[in-house]
Image (cartoon, rainbow, N blue to C red; front, side, top):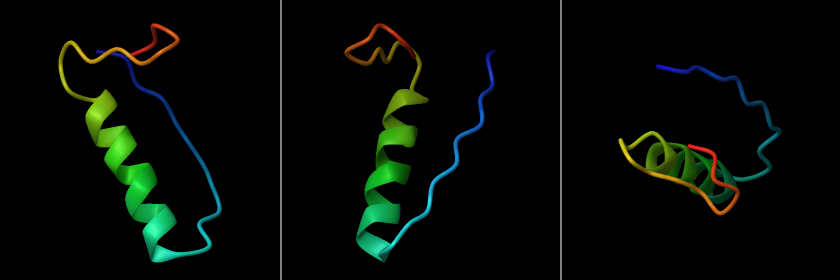
Length: 38
């Protein structure tokens, strides 16, 4: 299992929610993003 750190400054609750949704999608087994990472 690989681990990573990500940091960002969120300016709104909507932006925070969007980033967390992407992180959750990429953490699913077999999920691969457009760059082939994940």
